[in-house]
Image 1 (cartoon, rainbow, N blue to C red):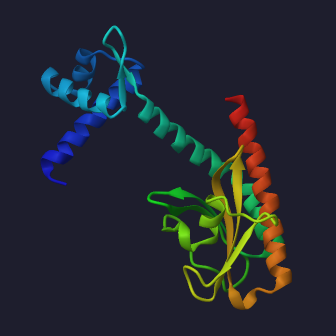
Image 2: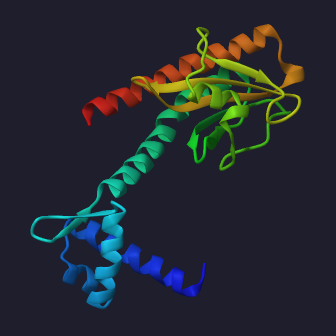
Image 3: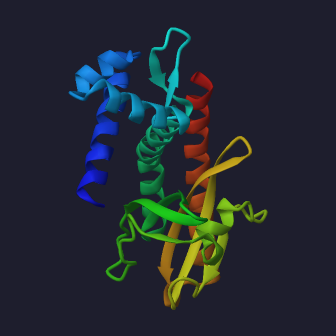
Length: 220
């Protein structure tokens, strides 16, 4: 980004912060809080309004817009999801010895890994937290697309990586899959019995997380 582009972003974020801190802010208040000329603040706030990051009240006060509220809710839900998943993920590690991943839908039909609990085996999968992979080539992507069979989990071999078997189960709230929990196991260590044990442990764990998310969603 150029210096001018960076300055524009900084100014827009300062205006958003002013509106959010106040709950509602006039143009003059937001401009003063952000130490910007009123003309500059007006131009940026109109842009933010057109993008639904801000909305204007009948009295011309600015409030957080639907897009900003949506992003905030998504960030809060993701943080809550990681917290609620910690104990169920540990249960999977205890039952299988394998590393367990939590992932959510990422940009452009991808899977984004957001959390891991490492397994107890000396040979285990490399940490992928923060990495995205295509939904079309992964077990987690399959469950996010609603392609989970009656067993409750998907198992795929040699997709993103050779010699790795991915087993994944969906976390669903209502009819919507919001995340996936997976084990990524060296294929040499997988037999039918171990695969079933991993799959069943994931199904139990994801059910616990989905129930907890549903309870919080109902309270909201």
